[in-house]
Image (tube, rainbow, N blue to C red; front, top):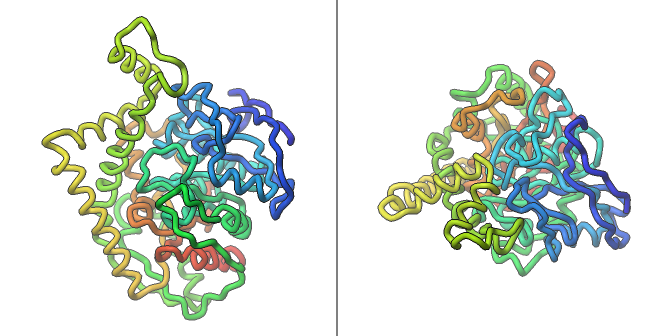
Length: 431
């Protein structure tokens, strides 16, 4: 296979992290087509770091299920892509390898945490990429970079080989410049895998030739509330009006649980991260811990040096929320709020086929512009409901503000990924 050399800091986008080794491929529906893989998806014989120093030198002895399927389909894996460390971020600035730049404007972030995958597609380096989405990590960079990205229904794609951050939220998903390419990847990666007990045996099939007549679309008022840039809202409303002009019924609705969705998400994901990242102790993965210190001191030293600031912050938050005396106050309440979000979505879906709104409340911010972690967390407000409820959601370009892309988010009922993609395709063709 063709090799990609390491991108140094002077490269324009430095989306890739490392060279890929030679691998045997078969012929199939993606025969000879290049694809880039987010660096938290295990690739046999290729270093997989999750954008973290703590996994420097870690080479998985096995392929993730999605990688096996891509090789079977004949795809050529040309590189691993940069990401926010362990998927924790909205900018791809929280990486041990430095930030990735936005091809639309290199002074701006590409979004995160799958920013390297989005930048590689947007820059034309590869036609396809895989990302993962825990709270918007496919849709955010798709929106910021002006490409298409799909977060499948929870359980639609195997997570076997995805290095865990928050198991109950994350999904592997496809990214490409157009909807049909995203759909082609979904056809490949949804083959059933019994090794993932959360996966449903429901292969994906979509013709991308549907019509909008008779479809009903819910537009939650909260998706255009406080914090949403009026210019972004205006561009998205133009897209919604297009749907109405094509025969879709537009129904304004309420989703009051959005007020609690962000808190429920961040309590849940930090608690799961605290548990999942405990395995990185300097013994089993990455650079070895010091043999001259006690286990406790060595464990502490290795994690202090290996983890970045944002990862440490989320581990500490999650450990605190799970600690004795606080579990009921935080984690248990977050699960109640999460259930309320899911119930809200199901209530809306009794009257509509899809939910539509902005993907992100703003366009891509400048590199280094967001220094306050809370400000960064707030930008996830429109993407986390789909993860909390396990729903399929896609981001497609719908216009620009000040030369920067704006994403339209389409959310569907559980396991109705095909309808979400069909609707996105209709908009792409005529919007």
